[in-house]
Image (cartoon, rainbow, N blue to C red; front, top):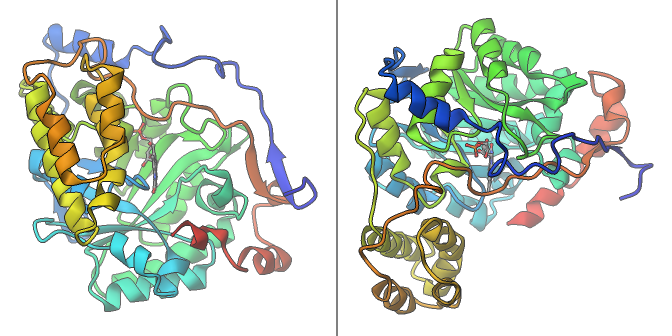
Amino acid sequence: MSNTSETIITAPHETDVLDPRTDASHTSTDAAYAAYAAGSSVPAIRPVQIGPITVPTPVVLSPMAGVTNWPFRVLCEEYGPDGLYVAEMITARALVARNPKAFRLCRFAPSEKIRSLQLYGVDPSIVEQAAHIVVDGGMADHVDLNFGCPVPKVTRRGGGSALPWKTDLFRELIERVVRVCGAANIPVTAKIRVGIDHEHETFLEAGHIAQEEGCAAVTLHARTTAEYYGGHSDWSRIGELTAALDIPVFGNGDIWGADDAVEMVRQTGCAGVAIGRGCQGRPWLFADIRNAFAGNPARVDPTLGEVGRVIERHAELLVEFYDGDERMAVHDLRKHVAWYLKGYPVGGSTRRAFMECESLDDVRREIGLLDPSMRMSERVRDKPRGRVRFAKKVHLPYGWLDSRVTTHEQRQTLFGDDPMDASY
Ligand SMILES: Cc1cc2nc3c(=O)[nH]c(=O)nc-3n(C[C@H](O)[C@H](O)[C@H](O)COP(=O)(O)O)c2cc1C
Protein backbone atom coordinates (compact mmCIF):
# COMPACT_ATOMS: atom_id res chain seq x y z
CA MET A 1 0.00 0.00 0.00
CA SER A 2 1.30 3.48 -0.78
CA ASN A 3 1.83 6.38 1.58
CA THR A 4 -1.17 8.17 0.16
CA SER A 5 -3.59 5.59 1.50
CA GLU A 6 -2.10 5.03 4.93
CA THR A 7 -0.16 6.83 7.62
CA ILE A 8 3.16 5.29 8.55
CA ILE A 9 5.12 6.23 11.64
CA THR A 10 8.78 5.42 11.42
CA ALA A 11 10.25 6.34 14.76
CA PRO A 12 13.85 5.50 15.53
CA HIS A 13 14.19 3.73 18.85
CA GLU A 14 17.32 4.13 20.91
CA THR A 15 16.96 0.58 22.04
CA ASP A 16 16.20 -0.88 18.62
CA VAL A 17 19.41 -2.79 18.62
CA LEU A 18 19.04 -4.10 22.13
CA ASP A 19 17.97 -7.66 22.49
CA PRO A 20 16.51 -7.91 25.99
CA ARG A 21 18.19 -11.27 26.38
CA THR A 22 21.52 -9.47 26.50
CA ASP A 23 20.36 -6.12 27.85
CA ALA A 24 21.98 -5.54 31.21
CA SER A 25 19.12 -3.26 32.24
CA HIS A 26 16.69 -6.15 32.00
CA THR A 27 16.93 -7.25 35.58
CA SER A 28 13.39 -7.76 36.77
CA THR A 29 13.88 -11.49 37.24
CA ASP A 30 17.12 -11.01 39.08
CA ALA A 31 15.53 -8.31 41.21
CA ALA A 32 12.67 -10.62 42.02
CA TYR A 33 15.03 -13.37 43.06
CA ALA A 34 16.97 -10.93 45.18
CA ALA A 35 13.75 -9.89 46.88
CA TYR A 36 12.93 -13.51 47.58
CA ALA A 37 16.39 -14.19 48.88
CA ALA A 38 16.08 -11.19 51.16
CA GLY A 39 12.93 -12.81 52.54
CA SER A 40 10.54 -10.05 51.48
CA SER A 41 6.91 -11.07 51.68
CA VAL A 42 4.52 -11.75 48.84
CA PRO A 43 2.09 -8.85 48.29
CA ALA A 44 -1.56 -9.45 49.08
CA ILE A 45 -2.87 -11.40 46.11
CA ARG A 46 -6.57 -12.13 46.08
CA PRO A 47 -9.02 -13.86 43.78
CA VAL A 48 -10.29 -11.53 41.06
CA GLN A 49 -13.92 -11.05 40.20
CA ILE A 50 -14.69 -10.61 36.51
CA GLY A 51 -18.40 -9.96 36.56
CA PRO A 52 -19.98 -13.20 37.79
CA ILE A 53 -16.73 -15.15 37.32
CA THR A 54 -14.29 -15.62 40.16
CA VAL A 55 -10.69 -16.28 39.16
CA PRO A 56 -9.13 -17.76 42.31
CA THR A 57 -5.53 -17.34 41.19
CA PRO A 58 -5.39 -14.01 39.36
CA VAL A 59 -3.38 -15.20 36.41
CA VAL A 60 -4.48 -15.11 32.77
CA LEU A 61 -3.12 -17.01 29.80
CA SER A 62 -2.87 -14.09 27.41
CA PRO A 63 -4.42 -14.84 24.03
CA MET A 64 -1.83 -15.78 21.41
CA ALA A 65 -2.81 -16.44 17.80
CA GLY A 66 -1.62 -19.85 16.69
CA VAL A 67 -0.72 -20.83 20.26
CA THR A 68 -3.59 -20.73 22.73
CA ASN A 69 -5.95 -23.20 21.11
CA TRP A 70 -7.62 -25.67 23.48
CA PRO A 71 -4.84 -28.27 23.55
CA PHE A 72 -2.37 -25.73 24.91
CA ARG A 73 -4.94 -24.21 27.26
CA VAL A 74 -5.75 -27.64 28.67
CA LEU A 75 -2.07 -28.23 29.48
CA CYS A 76 -1.78 -24.80 31.13
CA GLU A 77 -4.93 -25.34 33.15
CA GLU A 78 -3.74 -28.73 34.35
CA TYR A 79 -0.72 -27.01 35.90
CA GLY A 80 -2.65 -24.02 37.21
CA PRO A 81 -6.20 -25.17 37.74
CA ASP A 82 -7.70 -21.88 38.83
CA GLY A 83 -6.56 -19.18 36.43
CA LEU A 84 -8.21 -17.81 33.30
CA TYR A 85 -7.14 -19.25 29.96
CA VAL A 86 -8.12 -17.18 26.94
CA ALA A 87 -8.45 -18.53 23.40
CA GLU A 88 -6.64 -16.79 20.55
CA MET A 89 -8.30 -13.88 18.81
CA ILE A 90 -11.23 -14.69 16.56
CA THR A 91 -12.03 -12.32 13.74
CA ALA A 92 -15.60 -11.14 14.22
CA ARG A 93 -16.18 -10.99 10.49
CA ALA A 94 -15.11 -14.62 10.09
CA LEU A 95 -17.59 -15.71 12.76
CA VAL A 96 -20.32 -13.73 11.11
CA ALA A 97 -19.41 -15.38 7.80
CA ARG A 98 -19.69 -18.75 9.60
CA ASN A 99 -16.13 -19.62 8.64
CA PRO A 100 -15.50 -23.21 9.84
CA LYS A 101 -11.89 -22.52 10.79
CA ALA A 102 -12.95 -19.62 12.99
CA PHE A 103 -15.48 -21.91 14.66
CA ARG A 104 -12.79 -24.50 15.28
CA LEU A 105 -10.83 -21.87 17.21
CA CYS A 106 -13.89 -21.31 19.38
CA ARG A 107 -13.97 -24.90 20.62
CA PHE A 108 -13.29 -25.73 24.23
CA ALA A 109 -12.31 -28.95 25.93
CA PRO A 110 -14.84 -30.36 28.40
CA SER A 111 -12.33 -29.85 31.21
CA GLU A 112 -12.07 -26.08 30.68
CA LYS A 113 -13.81 -24.38 33.58
CA ILE A 114 -14.13 -20.88 32.14
CA ARG A 115 -14.67 -20.69 28.39
CA SER A 116 -12.95 -17.48 27.41
CA LEU A 117 -12.98 -16.10 23.84
CA GLN A 118 -11.32 -13.05 22.38
CA LEU A 119 -12.97 -11.16 19.53
CA TYR A 120 -11.26 -8.86 17.09
CA GLY A 121 -12.98 -6.42 14.81
CA VAL A 122 -13.15 -2.82 13.67
CA ASP A 123 -16.77 -2.42 12.62
CA PRO A 124 -18.95 -2.21 15.76
CA SER A 125 -21.94 -3.68 13.99
CA ILE A 126 -19.95 -6.75 12.84
CA VAL A 127 -18.46 -7.27 16.29
CA GLU A 128 -21.92 -6.93 17.78
CA GLN A 129 -23.20 -9.61 15.39
CA ALA A 130 -20.29 -11.85 16.38
CA ALA A 131 -21.14 -11.29 20.04
CA HIS A 132 -24.72 -12.35 19.28
CA ILE A 133 -23.42 -15.55 17.68
CA VAL A 134 -21.32 -16.27 20.77
CA VAL A 135 -24.13 -15.51 23.19
CA ASP A 136 -26.96 -17.18 21.27
CA GLY A 137 -24.82 -20.26 20.67
CA GLY A 138 -23.82 -20.47 24.35
CA MET A 139 -20.24 -20.51 23.10
CA ALA A 140 -18.39 -18.75 25.93
CA ASP A 141 -18.50 -17.62 29.56
CA HIS A 142 -16.27 -14.58 29.02
CA VAL A 143 -15.52 -12.33 26.05
CA ASP A 144 -12.32 -10.33 25.72
CA LEU A 145 -11.94 -7.63 23.07
CA ASN A 146 -8.65 -7.20 21.23
CA PHE A 147 -7.33 -3.64 21.21
CA GLY A 148 -3.70 -4.64 21.52
CA CYS A 149 -2.67 -6.27 18.27
CA PRO A 150 0.26 -4.38 16.67
CA VAL A 151 0.61 -6.26 13.39
CA PRO A 152 0.47 -4.05 10.28
CA LYS A 153 -2.35 -5.92 8.56
CA VAL A 154 -4.51 -5.15 11.61
CA THR A 155 -3.44 -1.58 12.46
CA ARG A 156 -3.57 -0.38 8.86
CA ARG A 157 -7.29 -1.20 9.04
CA GLY A 158 -7.59 0.82 12.26
CA GLY A 159 -7.88 -2.39 14.30
CA GLY A 160 -6.15 -3.79 17.38
CA SER A 161 -3.90 -1.29 19.09
CA ALA A 162 -4.73 1.47 16.57
CA LEU A 163 -8.42 1.49 17.49
CA PRO A 164 -8.47 3.15 20.95
CA TRP A 165 -7.08 6.31 19.31
CA LYS A 166 -10.55 6.78 17.82
CA THR A 167 -12.51 7.18 21.01
CA ASP A 168 -15.91 7.20 19.29
CA LEU A 169 -15.28 3.88 17.59
CA PHE A 170 -13.71 2.34 20.70
CA ARG A 171 -16.64 3.38 22.88
CA GLU A 172 -19.29 2.26 20.42
CA LEU A 173 -17.69 -1.12 19.89
CA ILE A 174 -17.45 -1.86 23.60
CA GLU A 175 -20.90 -0.50 24.31
CA ARG A 176 -22.51 -2.75 21.69
CA VAL A 177 -20.70 -5.90 22.79
CA VAL A 178 -21.35 -5.25 26.49
CA ARG A 179 -25.04 -4.78 25.73
CA VAL A 180 -25.27 -8.14 23.95
CA CYS A 181 -23.11 -10.08 26.42
CA GLY A 182 -24.47 -8.33 29.49
CA ALA A 183 -27.98 -9.56 28.69
CA ALA A 184 -26.61 -13.10 29.09
CA ASN A 185 -24.53 -12.21 32.16
CA ILE A 186 -21.31 -12.76 30.19
CA PRO A 187 -18.59 -10.36 31.30
CA VAL A 188 -16.62 -8.41 28.71
CA THR A 189 -13.02 -7.28 29.15
CA ALA A 190 -10.69 -5.21 26.99
CA LYS A 191 -7.04 -5.82 26.20
CA ILE A 192 -5.14 -2.66 25.35
CA ARG A 193 -1.62 -1.30 24.85
CA VAL A 194 -0.12 1.94 26.17
CA GLY A 195 -0.86 3.67 22.88
CA ILE A 196 0.35 3.93 19.32
CA ASP A 197 3.63 5.49 20.41
CA HIS A 198 4.64 7.77 23.26
CA GLU A 199 3.33 10.84 21.43
CA HIS A 200 -0.03 9.12 21.03
CA GLU A 201 -0.78 7.32 24.29
CA THR A 202 -4.31 6.07 24.80
CA PHE A 203 -4.31 3.68 27.75
CA LEU A 204 -5.70 5.93 30.50
CA GLU A 205 -8.53 7.24 28.38
CA ALA A 206 -9.21 3.78 26.97
CA GLY A 207 -9.28 2.30 30.47
CA HIS A 208 -11.82 4.92 31.58
CA ILE A 209 -14.00 4.37 28.53
CA ALA A 210 -13.88 0.59 29.00
CA GLN A 211 -14.92 1.03 32.62
CA GLU A 212 -17.71 3.50 31.78
CA GLU A 213 -19.08 1.20 29.10
CA GLY A 214 -19.28 -1.76 31.46
CA CYS A 215 -16.12 -3.78 30.94
CA ALA A 216 -15.50 -6.03 33.93
CA ALA A 217 -11.69 -5.75 33.74
CA VAL A 218 -8.90 -4.43 31.53
CA THR A 219 -5.57 -5.98 30.60
CA LEU A 220 -2.73 -3.61 29.79
CA HIS A 221 0.22 -4.80 27.72
CA ALA A 222 2.64 -2.12 28.82
CA ARG A 223 4.11 -1.35 25.41
CA THR A 224 3.08 0.90 22.54
CA THR A 225 2.31 -0.35 19.05
CA ALA A 226 5.66 1.08 17.92
CA GLU A 227 7.42 -0.91 20.62
CA TYR A 228 5.80 -4.07 19.27
CA TYR A 229 7.57 -6.77 21.36
CA GLY A 230 10.92 -4.98 21.73
CA GLY A 231 12.80 -3.78 24.78
CA HIS A 232 11.11 -4.09 28.13
CA SER A 233 7.49 -3.25 28.89
CA ASP A 234 7.02 -0.27 31.22
CA TRP A 235 5.28 -1.66 34.27
CA SER A 236 4.86 1.83 35.76
CA ARG A 237 2.03 2.34 33.23
CA ILE A 238 0.25 -0.67 34.73
CA GLY A 239 0.55 1.02 38.12
CA GLU A 240 -0.89 4.25 36.66
CA LEU A 241 -3.87 2.47 35.15
CA THR A 242 -4.51 0.44 38.30
CA ALA A 243 -4.57 3.65 40.34
CA ALA A 244 -6.91 5.32 37.85
CA LEU A 245 -9.59 2.62 37.56
CA ASP A 246 -12.03 0.89 39.88
CA ILE A 247 -12.30 -2.29 37.78
CA PRO A 248 -9.51 -4.90 38.02
CA VAL A 249 -6.43 -4.31 35.89
CA PHE A 250 -4.34 -7.25 34.70
CA GLY A 251 -0.74 -6.35 34.03
CA ASN A 252 0.92 -7.82 30.97
CA GLY A 253 4.41 -7.79 29.55
CA ASP A 254 7.65 -9.62 30.22
CA ILE A 255 6.67 -12.04 32.91
CA TRP A 256 9.20 -14.79 32.29
CA GLY A 257 9.06 -16.53 35.63
CA ALA A 258 6.84 -16.75 38.70
CA ASP A 259 8.92 -14.25 40.60
CA ASP A 260 8.34 -11.68 37.85
CA ALA A 261 4.60 -12.17 38.37
CA VAL A 262 4.92 -11.44 42.09
CA GLU A 263 7.17 -8.51 41.33
CA MET A 264 4.69 -7.01 38.88
CA VAL A 265 1.92 -7.13 41.47
CA ARG A 266 4.26 -5.69 44.07
CA GLN A 267 5.39 -2.83 41.84
CA THR A 268 2.04 -1.92 40.29
CA GLY A 269 -0.70 -3.08 42.66
CA CYS A 270 -2.44 -4.72 39.68
CA ALA A 271 -5.17 -7.24 40.45
CA GLY A 272 -3.53 -9.99 38.43
CA VAL A 273 -1.12 -10.80 35.66
CA ALA A 274 -1.43 -11.99 32.06
CA ILE A 275 1.21 -14.29 30.62
CA GLY A 276 2.10 -14.50 26.95
CA ARG A 277 5.49 -15.58 25.65
CA GLY A 278 6.79 -16.69 29.06
CA CYS A 279 4.65 -19.84 28.96
CA GLN A 280 5.52 -20.83 25.41
CA GLY A 281 6.88 -24.34 25.82
CA ARG A 282 6.38 -24.01 29.58
CA PRO A 283 2.76 -24.59 30.54
CA TRP A 284 4.03 -25.42 34.04
CA LEU A 285 4.70 -21.70 34.54
CA PHE A 286 1.09 -21.55 35.75
CA ALA A 287 1.93 -23.97 38.57
CA ASP A 288 4.94 -21.85 39.47
CA ILE A 289 2.84 -18.67 39.55
CA ARG A 290 0.16 -20.31 41.63
CA ASN A 291 2.82 -21.37 44.11
CA ALA A 292 4.51 -17.97 44.09
CA PHE A 293 1.21 -16.15 44.70
CA ALA A 294 0.65 -18.45 47.68
CA GLY A 295 4.13 -17.67 49.03
CA ASN A 296 5.33 -21.17 48.21
CA PRO A 297 8.87 -21.27 46.74
CA ALA A 298 8.31 -24.64 44.97
CA ARG A 299 8.91 -24.46 41.20
CA VAL A 300 8.51 -27.02 38.43
CA ASP A 301 11.91 -28.01 37.04
CA PRO A 302 11.14 -30.79 34.56
CA THR A 303 13.71 -33.20 33.20
CA LEU A 304 13.74 -33.63 29.45
CA GLY A 305 12.00 -36.97 29.99
CA GLU A 306 9.10 -35.14 31.64
CA VAL A 307 9.07 -32.52 28.91
CA GLY A 308 8.91 -35.35 26.36
CA ARG A 309 5.76 -36.64 28.03
CA VAL A 310 4.21 -33.15 27.83
CA ILE A 311 5.15 -32.91 24.14
CA GLU A 312 3.52 -36.29 23.49
CA ARG A 313 0.35 -35.29 25.29
CA HIS A 314 0.30 -31.95 23.48
CA ALA A 315 0.61 -33.81 20.16
CA GLU A 316 -2.23 -36.17 21.06
CA LEU A 317 -4.50 -33.27 22.04
CA LEU A 318 -3.67 -31.48 18.79
CA VAL A 319 -4.67 -34.57 16.82
CA GLU A 320 -8.06 -34.34 18.55
CA PHE A 321 -8.21 -30.61 17.85
CA TYR A 322 -7.62 -31.28 14.14
CA ASP A 323 -10.26 -34.04 14.09
CA GLY A 324 -7.72 -36.81 13.69
CA ASP A 325 -5.55 -35.10 11.06
CA GLU A 326 -2.10 -36.08 12.38
CA ARG A 327 -0.23 -34.12 9.76
CA MET A 328 -1.90 -30.83 10.66
CA ALA A 329 -1.45 -31.58 14.35
CA VAL A 330 2.23 -32.36 14.03
CA HIS A 331 2.83 -29.27 11.90
CA ASP A 332 1.10 -27.11 14.53
CA LEU A 333 3.24 -28.81 17.17
CA ARG A 334 6.54 -27.77 15.53
CA LYS A 335 6.76 -24.28 17.00
CA HIS A 336 5.81 -25.67 20.41
CA VAL A 337 8.58 -28.28 20.21
CA ALA A 338 11.12 -25.55 19.47
CA TRP A 339 9.93 -23.76 22.62
CA TYR A 340 9.78 -26.95 24.72
CA LEU A 341 13.39 -27.78 23.86
CA LYS A 342 14.68 -24.26 24.48
CA GLY A 343 17.31 -24.32 27.18
CA TYR A 344 17.90 -28.08 27.02
CA PRO A 345 21.22 -29.20 25.57
CA VAL A 346 19.63 -30.85 22.55
CA GLY A 347 21.54 -30.81 19.25
CA GLY A 348 20.47 -29.27 15.97
CA SER A 349 19.91 -32.63 14.30
CA THR A 350 17.37 -33.65 16.97
CA ARG A 351 15.56 -30.35 16.63
CA ARG A 352 15.51 -30.73 12.85
CA ALA A 353 14.17 -34.27 13.14
CA PHE A 354 11.20 -32.98 15.15
CA MET A 355 10.56 -30.35 12.47
CA GLU A 356 10.38 -33.10 9.86
CA CYS A 357 7.84 -35.24 11.74
CA GLU A 358 4.65 -35.95 9.82
CA SER A 359 2.80 -38.26 12.21
CA LEU A 360 2.27 -39.00 15.87
CA ASP A 361 4.51 -42.06 15.54
CA ASP A 362 7.31 -39.85 14.17
CA VAL A 363 6.95 -37.55 17.18
CA ARG A 364 6.93 -40.46 19.62
CA ARG A 365 10.05 -41.89 17.98
CA GLU A 366 11.94 -38.60 18.38
CA ILE A 367 10.78 -38.22 21.98
CA GLY A 368 12.13 -41.72 22.65
CA LEU A 369 15.55 -40.61 21.46
CA LEU A 370 15.82 -37.72 23.94
CA ASP A 371 18.04 -38.08 27.00
CA PRO A 372 15.39 -38.16 29.74
CA SER A 373 17.76 -37.04 32.47
CA MET A 374 18.70 -33.67 30.96
CA ARG A 375 17.70 -30.49 32.78
CA MET A 376 17.14 -26.97 31.55
CA SER A 377 20.07 -24.60 31.65
CA GLU A 378 19.82 -22.05 34.47
CA ARG A 379 20.79 -19.35 31.97
CA VAL A 380 17.55 -19.83 30.05
CA ARG A 381 15.02 -20.55 32.79
CA ASP A 382 12.73 -17.56 33.44
CA LYS A 383 14.37 -15.55 30.66
CA PRO A 384 12.83 -13.94 27.55
CA ARG A 385 11.55 -16.24 24.82
CA GLY A 386 9.53 -15.76 21.63
CA ARG A 387 9.23 -12.48 19.72
CA VAL A 388 11.46 -9.63 20.95
CA ARG A 389 11.51 -7.07 18.10
CA PHE A 390 10.46 -3.44 17.77
CA ALA A 391 8.11 -2.52 14.92
CA LYS A 392 9.98 -1.28 11.89
CA LYS A 393 7.03 0.99 11.10
CA VAL A 394 3.55 1.54 12.46
CA HIS A 395 0.98 1.34 9.70
CA LEU A 396 -2.25 3.25 10.21
CA PRO A 397 -5.14 4.28 7.97
CA TYR A 398 -4.37 7.51 6.13
CA GLY A 399 -4.86 10.56 8.38
CA TRP A 400 -5.64 8.36 11.40
CA LEU A 401 -3.76 10.55 13.87
CA ASP A 402 -5.29 13.84 12.70
CA SER A 403 -8.29 13.56 14.97
CA ARG A 404 -9.56 11.43 17.86
CA VAL A 405 -12.86 10.65 16.17
CA THR A 406 -13.66 8.84 12.95
CA THR A 407 -15.07 10.66 9.98
CA HIS A 408 -17.92 9.22 7.95
CA GLU A 409 -15.47 8.59 5.08
CA GLN A 410 -13.04 6.78 7.38
CA ARG A 411 -15.79 4.49 8.59
CA GLN A 412 -16.90 3.77 5.04
CA THR A 413 -13.37 2.79 4.06
CA LEU A 414 -12.57 0.84 7.23
CA PHE A 415 -15.73 -1.19 7.31
CA GLY A 416 -15.26 -2.63 3.84
CA ASP A 417 -13.89 -6.11 3.36
CA ASP A 418 -11.36 -6.91 6.02
CA PRO A 419 -8.27 -8.79 4.83
CA MET A 420 -8.14 -10.46 8.24
CA ASP A 421 -10.79 -12.82 6.88
CA ALA A 422 -8.10 -14.29 4.70
CA SER A 423 -6.15 -15.36 7.74
CA TYR A 424 -8.44 -18.34 8.26
C1 LIG B 1 2.65 -15.36 18.88
C2 LIG B 1 1.81 -14.33 19.57
C3 LIG B 1 0.46 -14.22 19.27
C4 LIG B 1 -0.33 -13.26 19.91
N1 LIG B 1 -1.66 -13.20 19.63
C5 LIG B 1 -2.47 -12.37 20.33
C6 LIG B 1 -3.87 -12.40 20.18
O1 LIG B 1 -4.44 -13.20 19.41
N2 LIG B 1 -4.61 -11.52 20.92
C7 LIG B 1 -4.02 -10.63 21.79
O2 LIG B 1 -4.73 -9.85 22.43
N3 LIG B 1 -2.70 -10.61 21.97
C8 LIG B 1 -1.91 -11.47 21.28
N4 LIG B 1 -0.56 -11.49 21.53
C9 LIG B 1 0.00 -10.63 22.59
C10 LIG B 1 0.07 -11.39 23.91
O3 LIG B 1 -1.21 -11.76 24.37
C11 LIG B 1 0.74 -10.52 25.00
O4 LIG B 1 -0.03 -9.37 25.19
C12 LIG B 1 2.14 -10.10 24.61
O5 LIG B 1 2.88 -11.20 24.13
C13 LIG B 1 2.89 -9.48 25.82
O6 LIG B 1 2.93 -10.38 26.89
P1 LIG B 1 4.26 -11.25 27.20
O7 LIG B 1 5.39 -10.27 27.39
O8 LIG B 1 3.91 -12.02 28.44
O9 LIG B 1 4.51 -12.09 26.00
C14 LIG B 1 0.25 -12.40 20.88
C15 LIG B 1 1.60 -12.50 21.16
C16 LIG B 1 2.39 -13.45 20.54
C17 LIG B 1 3.85 -13.55 20.89
